[in-house]
Length: 222
Image 1: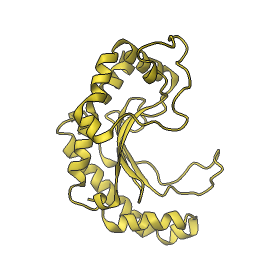
Image 2: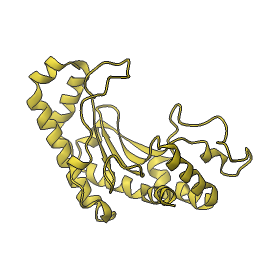
Image 3: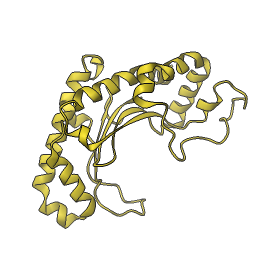
């Protein structure tokens, strides 16, 4: 579970997003980050029983920095008001699909997939879907996947209006070929974050996603 103090810190950071406040509350930040890192380490060990390729990872290999890159953003707030961990056997900078846990009071979720891949990886995944549409549809239609995620996430700006170049408009896989990201997300209410069931809930969510992750990475490796 996540400690309530960690959620309290993130809530406060959202409303006091400036360096003087952060510096004055650095000890609270360090405690919150340590709490989240501890959960991620536990999650890696638990999910690693199903996905042994990640067992070599430590939380430090998965966690993102709290500092925001404001160079090209209109939002100049210096810090994120969340903690995020990307669990990928090849590291958080890998181009392959992986698993993600997002901790943000009122907006937490778990899931993963392939988010905004580069054009080369995206083209390979689309080809894999085109060649193996029945298999992909079976993965998305599996009971565990549907019960956990419902369907692929549809994010604003992440779906083309037309099929990509090289594919006919009436391609049976047209719906999926238009996607620019292939992710699935399951929301986590704050009450679940501080419950003892959080670990098992997250592991089950990751397990439900495993076939899709394997499919996407097979396409990238092709």
